[in-house]
View 1 (cartoon, rainbow over the protein chains, first blue to last red):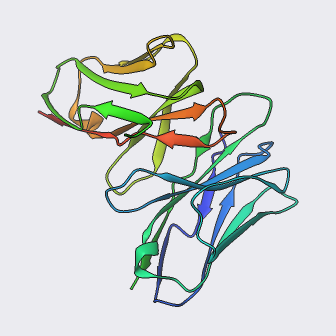
View 2: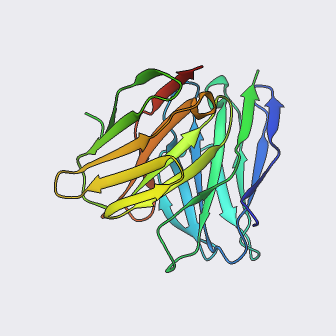
Length: 113
Length: 110
């Protein structure tokens, strides 16, 4: 069965650079969630999208932006990267109205040096 | 105080032992997830519960909505079960996002 795809799986950037993380949800899933998990920390919700519109916003820094495209894939854009942005970034997808279950992608590990 | 708390934080077991991980939450929820995360790895969804009990192989998850408590049980534990187990809830008033517990790190020794 198709799963959530994230790319790249690993990314190394320097401070003050920009990064773009991509998430491809399971086919027919119209809702995407982004989570950030710092080293040794719980995942924290960043932002979510339903039908290409932002549906909820968590602790996402102003330096980050995200959007969902017409094919339902989502991109998380991160600018002016800081060392503290080093984390595992997960996306999850869900089909609204079908079930509450979120399906997680494998994550993108971002390292900022 | 975290909205979702797990116990124990760390757990070691010998292969074959029965394991229980507990999750308590303080918010009204519409669903509770049990997730598994291997070191450096992605998150795998094990169960999603809104009531009662679910079983999948050697894993059993239960939830008591009135007591705001859930348990994850692993029967006949195996070293490959070693991972971090995370409880996450979908709060009733919090739209869709999940609130994560702090995780329980399980190590099963042969």
